[in-house]
Length: 109
Image (tube, rainbow, N blue to C red):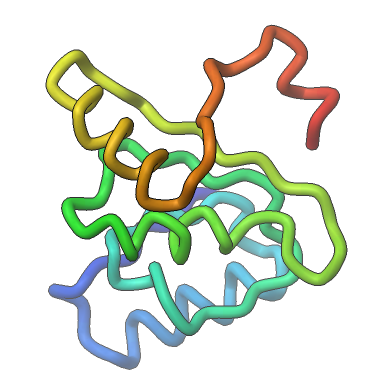
């Protein structure tokens, strides 16, 4: 099951979807920056950024959803030519290098 969560939903709807995701009855959760901070879900192993955050500080919070609690995690960024500048700014901000996705990404999860 795939669930989508966004800021236009009321709190009760968001809580129900999070409960379903935490229990495993929903296996994929698509969300906005609404869940970038303060949500601890143990079973997240993959985070896909459909777009990069406009706020560099939110990047670490987004990708930090995966691989928590000692588990492995992978973050994948969809990057267009328009996003390259922001990606480089994020790399510089965190003093890191974000590599292109390897062919064996399934082995990393």
